[in-house]
Length: 153
Image (cartoon, rainbow, N blue to C red; front, top):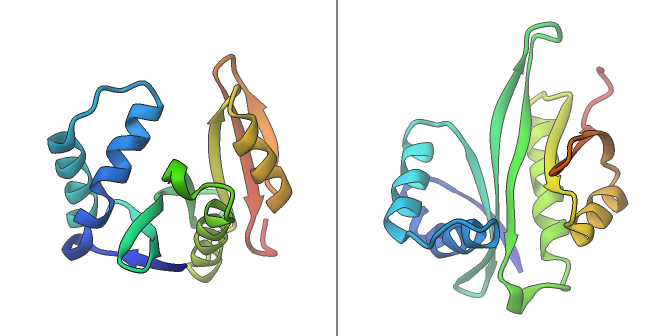
């Protein structure tokens, strides 16, 4: 299993997974929309995407968006999307993708990584807490988590 960061030349690797991710969150399948959305994020340097590769096939991905803090004068990151093909779950791929995202944020000078997950996604909550994310708030649909990635808070 290899984790790679993709750019606009490689975005097709993640289109089907991104579409499946959207379906998981009860959105209609739309490969054209998935393709256009991902390409636009990468062309505009609006997101960072890491893909888990099993040989030549993409089996999982995570997408991060920047989040700026005026007070800290830093760019932090939101781990917005995380999805692993159901056939490849329970193999540590999600954790590897998250760890890659955290390391990227740390090297980028961020102070934290935030994420949200559905209140009924107990598997994800368990993984996030095991990695060290702390739940910092919630509403009726999502729990918010944060992990510090540098000593500067």
